[in-house]
Amino acid sequence: MRRYVEFGASPRGSISLVVAARALALIRGRDYVVPQDLVDLAHDVLRHRLVLSYEAIATGVGEDALIDAALAAVPVPRLDVAERAA
View (tube, rainbow, N blue to C red):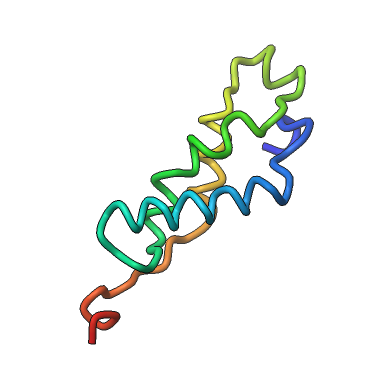
């Protein structure tokens, strides 16, 4: 997959992802972020921050496919919300 990305998201991309996840958690009625918040926002926050290589453009590999591959490569920790509330 590396050959498809000319420039990846900068550190500002991860900062934006965290800020957006905090806002989404608040909208969802929580004062903490869960991993699913990050997964739900990853495409919207990171899509425009990736610069694809010419090979990716020529083969039709898009930003969403690359973000999906990155999300699939990182296991999402399970969180028991009942434990958090206690």
